[in-house]
Length: 316
Image 1 (cartoon, one colour):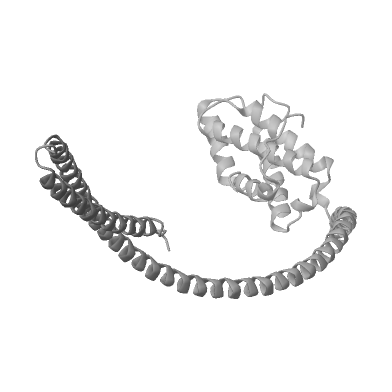
Image 2: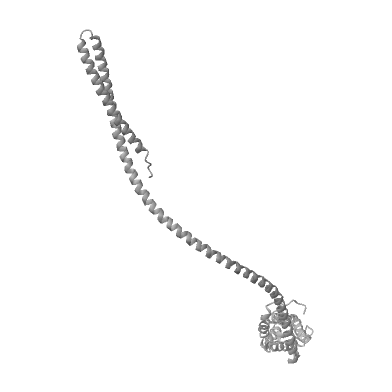
């Protein structure tokens, strides 16, 4: 009774007890008695003879099988069920050891006596339907009490959950209102965005037109620049020609001055020739002066044209 029983799952107790009880058959008992006699074991050295021990074992086996067959084992307290399983296991071990040739006569008597004592202690051999019915009712009441406590715990938990749910619902209502306002603002923003987009498209069309005009103006400006470049080149050529004419005029004037000086030296010798030379010199000077004035006017005009071309902006 004091040995600690094994601890299988409670749902397996009935099956395990049944499996052990079915090994304690009359055939196994007779085999153990025959083996003890063959080996010369002392069959009466315990408190009772081995034959009486086997009779007690057969009665205990019948009680155990009856408990399992009629589903009465599960109505007993779990501690008694575990005791019965542990004691039955020790009986089976000692019986098998005796059949195998080990001298377990005394150990078998002790283990059978423990099992029989438990059956008598809990009056398992006389369990009636009324007694078991009362035990079943008590077990049902215990299960119902457990269920009631669980429901009560869940109800308390539900109260806190309900409070949280109400807070969440209120928050959802606030969010719904905020979402409505946000939706209206979004619709207004979308409308404004559409207007801005339309304006942007118009500006884009205007920009495209303006760009085409700028491209056309650029082509025109490039042509003007080319014309100005050409005019500048021509003016440069004229300026060079004018410089050459000017140099030639200066050379002529220098030559005339030399001739005039020579004529002055010879004035005493040939006055008439001097006067003729002076007249010729005057005419040549007038011609040279007139030519220089004409060339200077042309040069000024070309330079003005060149400056006007340089003032034309390239990007127009």
